[in-house]
Each structure stands twice: as C-alpha cells, then as structure tokens.
Amino acid sequence: MAFNHIQIFIDYLEQLRGLLVKIEASVGADLSILDARLTDDMFPLFTQVAIAAGFSLRACCPMANDPVVSFEAQQHTFMGLQTQLKDTIAYLKKLNNSKIEITKNHISDMAGPVKVTLPAMEFLHRFALPNFYFHISMVYAIAKVNGIAVSKGDYDGFHQYPAGFTFEDE
Figure 1 (cartoon, one colour):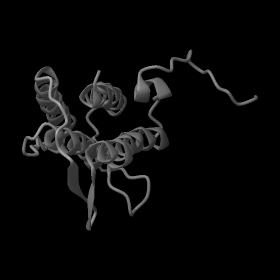
Figure 2 (figure 1 turned 90 degrees about the vertical axis):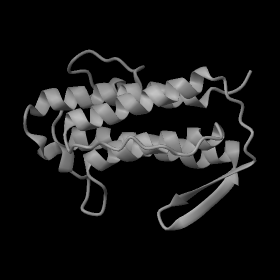
Figure 3 (figure 1 turned 45 degrees about the vertical axis):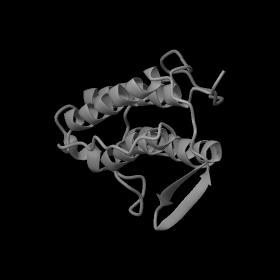
C-alpha cells in the first residue's frame, strides 16, 4: 500500500481552515492580525497561510506529474484565504482520487534563493512536509502571541483539553 501523502496535506489544510475560523471569530472585522508577525524578519500570518497551501501543491503536483498550480488568495482577507484553502483542498482531493503513483525520480524546488533537488520521497519527507508544518505552526504561534485562544487541538485535530487546562504547576 502506498503512503498517502496527499491525504496528510488535505487533513492539515482542513485544520488550518478551522484555525482561521477561530482566529477570525476572535478578531471580528479587525484584519490587522493578517499582517501580524512573530518577528520583523518573518512573514505575516496571511503569507504563512499562503505558503502552507503552496507547499502542498509544490509537493503533490510534481509527484502526480502535473504542473504546479496555485490558488493564491485574490483578497487580503479571511475570505480570500479560506477560498485559497478550499480550492487547494479540492484540487488535492481530485489528485487523491486519481490514485496516482509516484513515478518521478527527483523533484526540484526553491528553498528561498537556493535550488533543492532530492529523490521524490526524500523531497516529501525532508523538504515539503517540514516546511508545510512549519508555516502552519507559524499561523498558530502568531495567533497565540496575539492573545487568541487556540489550542494544540486547533493545530493537529487530536489534542483536546478542557478550558483552563495546563501542564504547568500552579
């Protein structure tokens, strides 16, 4: 049985959609959170979401022998990001349903200004997935440092804690 990498991207993009819903519910009409950053030299929340969506396509399209597509948000809004994620997920579901087999020997992509070329599964495990998770983690971290009540369960869908729970001694 082949490793279903596409479903992992779909599942975490769905989690990201839910995380954005929670962030938007917390900030209301104030879109300034979309421009919030952890530090001045890091991308803002809006860009972190877009990059996460992009990494899913940058990994899955080459493995399906398809050109890399993009569903970049046309509006700098929560709705724009939700549309980007919805369209990305729909495309990935189409790929997933086509029962693709990974036939590419190597995949090349850019890591900033540096070209990375790795065997397909190594590309997936050492480059695409870590970067995908990193950018989703940054969305979570930006929300946390801006006082938005999100939990690890909002990130991964598994952890569920009662309100006010902490591992820290009081």
